Length: 273
Length: 328
Image (tube, rainbow over all chains, first blue to last red):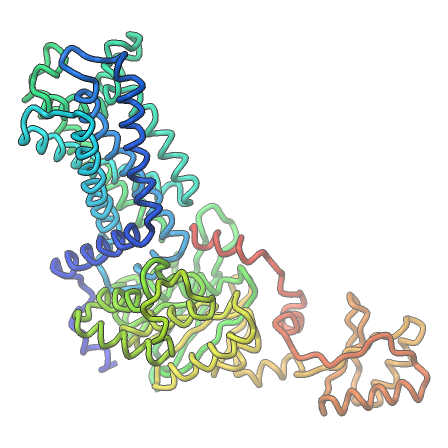
């Protein structure tokens, strides 16, 4: 058994290797998006369509107390985009599972966490691209943020929320196992949270029983906070402070991540036991 | 010679199933040997490969690859193995070269090393011309070859190939056999699973026959053929003439002809191949026994099974089996 002693690794993956593996898989996942242009087109057309439809169809009816509907809408659209973008984590993972790509990865001496991390990081990068486009389109059709710093802060908050949600969808993908199941389950989860929220309309217009949910669920909390950051404190519902909303958002983001990420890792391991 | 792969009494039952996928399998593969695991769908072949390749934990039993325990030191094992075949996919949207280089990087080769190593293996599998095209433009045979390249890029000491030619056309199949033969000629230990007796026959030094999670026979290709009697003649005659035909055949081969009741065939070994066939036809003609059908039959997996287990290798839908094993 002398031939077995010459290897460097001795059965461990070093932190440097872990980072290298994560970056390799992130790059690989991004290449897939670039090589499959229809994915990127669908990813951008849907939110652009929402943006234009909502602006021009509902814009007149929903003009708020703080300016045009477009100003109200863009922060919501940013959150809408990251949440829908995060569902890609579920579909991407299940596609790799079904194709056997993950089997190959698992047979290699690479970091176990790199598969999930590479997936969620790639979807994070993708959300940056799509949201940048949303802001550009918004600016073209009349969106005017109060300050650039505020807009960037809002964008960052939305992106981090999206990253947390990626882990939720990783769990859904790993439980659902097939791309079809993962997609239907993701949309079932996404629609009530995105629509019964402050993403597109002020929640005050909803029936009071729905308001309780719509005002306090995480998508609304983030959307309202992004709005406050982007447009200024007067865009917040009365009685809310910007600091309070930012803190609440961070609690949600960290909380969702803290629950979903370990759960994702657990389900990932369980597939192979 | 030293043992390269040792599996001892491996048990594995999938969650939600009451039938064990592996019911106590032991195999030993010497270093540099080619071992063919032969069995129908659902026999447990893929499960055993998955256990040995650290993709699946056995319920009990011990498996060692190059002296390392697959459960205790999975990372160590992974530095020594390459996995290829049916389910270990290549990435559709990357080019062939990108696929191989990525796998090289994940084996912890440096960028420069993975690049030169990729050139080397792509050359060896004769895929240089297509190397910079996305894999989704590849034919089935090309994908299998690329898959082989990816499994070899880390210079594995042990190669696992799970049904390397299932689902590809027979012509490319022979090409892939020759390629595999060449690739392991340098002393790589190879464990391959297959549903095709010919494939095991062509490639393997030792063949293990697996059925319902148990190893039911093991030996060289010749050993196995002796169990099943090699090439046979199958003769179909009218029911009324069967007894007469049986007597004639008994005299010809000096032993009792077998009778396959299900297909109503008399079966005798064809010791001289087609010459034996001619002799049978002549003898039947002389005795005026009408022949409804006669053929030379090369042994198949079904014959191996029939003779070893008394039942035919149960056909199951390959897709259903594949997804159920992977999804687990």
